[in-house]
Amino acid sequence: MHYLGQLLSQNYLNHPAFSFGAMEIGVDTNKIEMFNELKLAADKIGNRGNQSKEISKELRFCLDDIFSELKGGVIDKNEEQFISELHRESARLLESELDWLKKKKDYFSNFHNKQNLKNTISLLNHRFFLGQIDNDEIVKLQQLARKDIKKFKANALQGKTKREELSINSGSTIRSIVKILNRAFSRAGVLDAVSTYMGVKMRVSGAALELSVPSASWWKNGITGLNRAPNSLYAHLDESIEFPKSIMYLSDVKESNGPTSYYPTIYEEAYLNPLQEIIGRVVGIVGSADTSPLKKFYGKTYHQSMTSENFRRHFMRLPYELRFNSHFGWDVMPGSELETQLVSKEIKMLGSAGKFIVFDGAKLLHRGGLVEDGDRVALQIIFSSYNIKSTAKRVINKLKVLRK
Image (tube, rainbow, N blue to C red):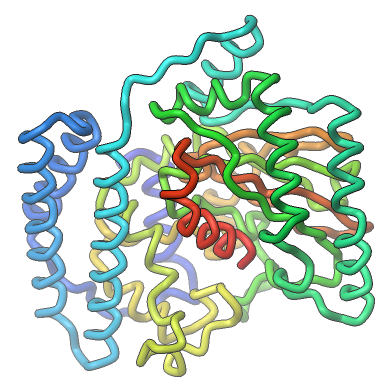
């Protein structure tokens, strides 16, 4: 295990809010290693015929076998439900990733200039690149957003600060914004860079227009009993590997306005194993649905699962080889070496309206919208495969997740 991975593991063991003294559920590590080897092979082989089908079949069997063993070690019905829901969500994400691997090809764009090539190389090597759209394009976007931003600001003055009260992700305004973005990103070579990185033709398929204000509290620390909140609040990785994204400012953003932050190399240095990563990207969903028997038992605060002691108890029963939360920024122990490492890697994107970052949200730790003063107007932009009709529903669902 690499150093940062050790820090992540130790963080939960040393954090007072996660220290319950309960034994973790035992699982045959050979089964975990087998799953991980199969998943790495599936990622390399992609859509190559019978080999791909056989590996996918073995992966499903291996996942079911691991969770069957986990279920055999539960101590009550609530813990059994936790493992069952985690199994279901992990299987869903695995299927989504296997389906995505079937679509990928060796796609290479015809680059217009050296900047396009530079952006592609940055995305391939570092998971992100920065850019700035033309002034006339940002003016058009600001004009389109004006009416909704005025409404959002009125909501904020009335104390309506939930993210759904300060953002939109559908309707005629968003459709017009998407058209402008596709034209601008096509001319700038952004679509070429994203398509080459993903291995399939991509375009902007959705966006969320959002106002961030100081009175919003969705991002603030929900774990009580600490001297202060960690300096990594809301730092997270996204669930899906098939929807790279962009954040674009429609207002000038300084350090106090909640700039987007990103943490180069943290994902790589964490050295997560494939099953640990899958579990970490879905574990927060467990017990969140209104239909879940665990909904009241957990009583989560908004979308921060770790605010629930009952949830934390279940989380800590997972084997350490599988224990991960993709939204771990809230879980970091203040004053820890992990916090120090994260702060040292954080880069804040400051700049004027029109500045943007394009990145792989599943592999670049990031956060944003934590406003201390003034406000921030931004677009959260989603790219998806060129066949928009086949991905429209998943894009809308992804944007709903972004707003949580």
